Length: 207
Length: 313
Image (cartoon, rainbow over the protein chains, first blue to last red):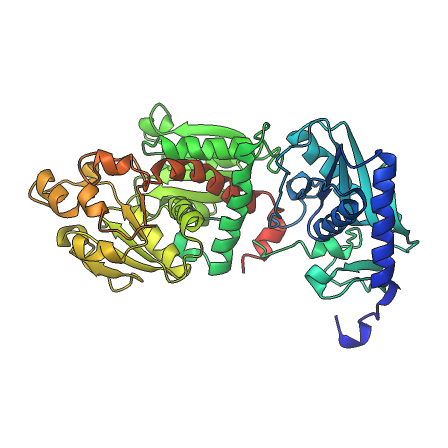
């Protein structure tokens, strides 16, 4: 991409917006599930894990009780696994108590096509049988391709398909922000392949 | 990367990617459902021209846990015993649509020939060829050492025994050097290759002098089936000078571990007490082997063929 065509990103949520949204989500999770007892938080790497940790801290501050928090890698359950080069795996960490009979709250940064969440539901099925699965996302940008919706949403962000939404978190990027930018499609990219930035960041060394 | 033929082909990043992936694969063993969907619909052929128990079942378990279809082919009882050539076997596999071929062969270079001849389009994994290489064994050894010792950078690793006939030794020396370890091979002069100048390691004939400076020691099997002539006067003399017994093990630093690629000749290169001691990680090596082979099959076979050919450059 030539320097002239680099789009200037616009901040749609700043650090305090993100903080307030996560506090609200933490309260909503407690309200919906009548406390923290049945809840297990599973973040989807990379940034979903950071968000799950933050929600877990907020729940602990409100309830005085910590909820089991882990991470769930969905790479091998994706429906495009055979269409792209092999990807590096992320860490899966299921809390010691397991997920059987629990309410699993999946946490991800951006909800877009819904395909990541479908993959996550399949991954959960191989790990155990939770009582219920709920979904918390920081940003819902629309354009679903599957019948999936979020239970807890930080911000609904209407976007067009050519835009790209990027979530930055202090743990990974040095600052908290949600950015939106017009994306100029790269010549090498097929027009059909849509990405949100978070999944690009998961690619490691390519084989 | 499309094939895994030699441990020397791996860059440090690629080797670490395989080891990190194996770390995730290993956690699968603790789950109730030991199955991942990554290779659904892919076919893996285990093409074994030479006897093997642990490598074949390890590859079979790895492929099955990734949901691939597995076809086992062993030379005994196949058309090979009727005189079929490697080329015709490869053409048969190609016609059957093999996505991955795990090849063990008594001749060095056979997997390389399968991969580069154009007879078939699938990915080839070298599961041991003659006295050349056995890259997945080296990867699982490095993985096991990394789990016990942390990073292998600067670690001192000693490989003892029949280096001349050992594909395990060659692959390990190449991989461990890539990962930054300091490798010393110890063997009687008759069991070292004539020219070791191309090997990124030190050599020694004296096991007792090397053991106190070792973070891990790997005992190699004395391969009687590859020895047409006498390489040492007697088994007893070999054991006295190069066998690992409890007295020799006591010279190792406190955290040092003992590895053996198996199958062991108990009482020959390793005593039964050492093999069953708490320092021995020999059983763990087998468990780790499945995780490593899952990682290799996943990284070679899960992606699309077109794009992986591009990234081969």
